[in-house]
Image (cartoon, rainbow, N blue to C red):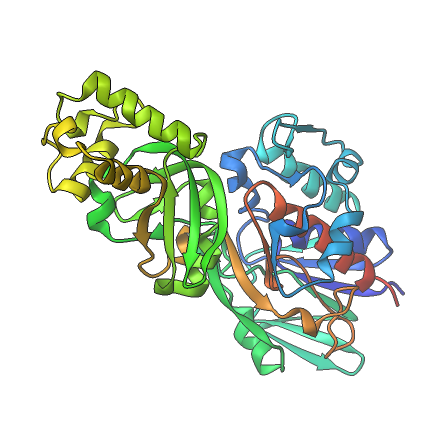
Length: 402
């Protein structure tokens, strides 16, 4: 008789787990609370599905799961998907996409492979509990129940609740004795003082953004910075958002608007601009370098007005130094955290001390975890989906073993 494996969650890691368990000889039942599997996959990479990243970069992952390094290092997204008939391309930054440039192609490859392996998919099924029955498990879903020899929990974290991932299994796991790192939103905008950003809404600019705490800069990311009505956004901010959620108002974001200039080059640029535009209002001074509204906001912050004459406002070295400092270290306070509905992933989850290298529970034999339910999250760039595929494949393969 085949070993029975039930996988809870039909997202990226759940589909990978179900396929791996079936390919290793198990009879697999996949439970999904949505009407269809893979809803969140379709939204990734702006609908193109950034399904991985070339090479393994340990510094791009965060959390309490050192076991993840070996799993990720052994995983090849290209090899994984090519056997499903899906071909991959790599962009100049090492991000991996399906050659078709469509997230639906990734989901189709996973669905077709699952069907070919005889995975039984049961949708519109919300799991509410889990109990041990002798040497196996009973998964509870309202009035329904599913018996299995092994269970893989791939129900995701708390991010993107519109996709069915609202962290509903975490309270269940706490009651079962698991250490849970408090879930926080990650890869999301960082709220700040609306008075500082409202006038800049819609502006995008290249910048280096640093998360700064009481002991100095904790992490710096360079890329496109976006201003919204109440927050800072853009990939460079997304990669700092987990720190903002963890440290809250103790943290501030420092923006360098001239990331490609040395200090000497920035000083020379300002002198050159003053020689050409010194007789103009201060708010006009920087329009050859930065969007006009940013220059105006900087001048208002320094002088109270953007209409003061530039060479009069910056007539001595101290004032020029102040403006240069503001251009390189424009600070924004962190004002709370974004909602999970704005987050792409969850920072937090089942602590790494609770699982073995096989991703089996140390507390309950035959119970496995994968994906976002575990306390591991990555930066933007395909790192989180790489973890979803690799952890799902690992958990499913091991769950199929007797």
